[in-house]
Structure formats: C-alpha cells, structure tokens
Image (cartoon, rainbow, N blue to C red; front, side, top):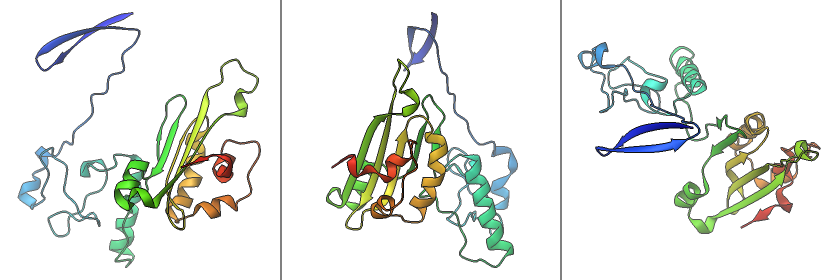
Length: 218
C-alpha cells in the first residue's frame, strides 16, 4: 500500500491506496511566440482561436492541432492539416474537418470506444421523443472457457423516424479495433435498417451491432 497527500481547497487529504494514477493535464506553450504582435488571438489558457476552417484572427495565418484546444488527438491534427492543405492548395474552398463525429478510444482494460453523440447529447439536440436507443450486454466468446467472464456493452443512439445512427458506443474486448469501421458508417449517416441488413460475421463481438434487433431497445 502507498500513502499520498493532496491539497483540496487548502486542506491536506491523506489517502491509503494500492496505486495512484496521476493525470496533470497540459497547456499550450504560446505565450513566447509573439502572437499578439501578429494579430493572432488566443483564449485565456493560450489556445489559438480559429474558425471552422482553421483560420486565425490574422489573415493568412492558420492553426491546427492541440494548440487550438479542441479534440486533442494526433489523428485530428493530421486530418485538420490535410483538409486545410486541400483548401489552400487544391482549390477546394469548402474543405474542412467535421469535428462532430470523431471516433475516440480509451485504451483501458477492457477498451472503450465511442463515436458521435451520447444519449443525453442526442436528447438535448433532437428532443427525447425523437431518440430511440438500442443496448446490448453479453459475454464475449473469448471468455467462454474461462472463470472470469467480463461483459461487453454496446449502445446505438438513433434519431427518429428513419433511425439514423448519431451515436455508437462500445465497452469490451476488441472495442478499439471495431470502432474504426463503424465510425465510417456513422459519419456516412447510416441507419439502423442498414445495420440490420448487413450480414453478421460470426463469431465476433462486432456482429452484435448488426443483429441488435435482439438487444434491448427503449
């Protein structure tokens, strides 16, 4: 066991634990760049302010990646840079990154994968009466012969009446790998009916997403 102390509103709290995970966060190092001289505005934390096309407040100056303070992921920075390059140098004036459906994985044990809106976000955006949710919970066949049987959880958030899938979430073995393909479907505006018409690959966990008629809906 390890003992550590932390300050909470000027009080010292002592905690006994078997381990500590410490996440300090990060901040942009932009103060020494002289951005104000160039007319580039930042927020109170130092993130560079950009519009949907990655334009800063200074004409001809652009910013992509973590320094913008939005979706701090390497693939997001790469994608935003590619879209910007196409817009600037390939004549695609409306090219921009859609930040609305960025697939994200937490590489925990088991991993967690998510793309699109949560149920709460979908209900706030479209109204609770216009949302239908499909859920499933099962034991992966990988664990069929083991004593320990962790569960896999899946969830589809759909907008009525066509049941367009606006959120797809999974916790369980293989979530990190399966999410990339399903993210393409969500970005493309796939519906639950299209998922249902897709032939399942058996035995896999991913097949549950296209056979969720047997899952619990609400």
